[in-house]
Image (cartoon, rainbow, N blue to C red; front, side, top):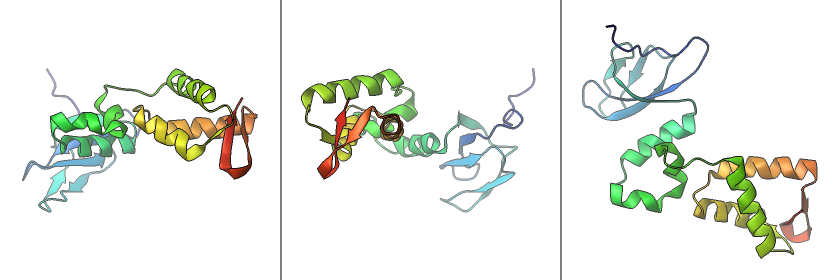
Amino acid sequence: MNPPSNNAPAGRLEYLLFRCRHCSALAVATSTQKTSQCTACGHINNMSKIVVIKRFDDKEHAVNALRLVKIPLDQRANVPYLASSTGEMKTTLEDIKLLLWTLKRAHPDGITEIDILAKAKEEGLDTKKVKTYLEKCKSEGKILEKSGEKLKIM
């Protein structure tokens, strides 16, 4: 049986979470790198010899996973923006629509974008995805910008 390869499928960039072969510190590198220098000890890791712990398609999720490991287990629930990198919670379009529907009912005169994003973070949603969806809704006329930066959800 052949050992698993560290190589990503052709044409696909991945972010790899791995341990330094010298000091065992966690690090992230891209699948296209030949080597990666450890930020903890300075050792140059040959990427063909590392053991990949987890692969990510998104740099933000890889870096958040690296941050998450440093937070004690009992405190991780208090950091909702990191939840998506653990695989426990994913932000779907339906989650975002439900959030906006709820906010529409609670704030019929409008709500600021900052307050929407704060509520999304409080609910454990990916705020980048929520912001992207808000921009899409603005361009389609589903959300109107009112004076004083309040958004009226249609």
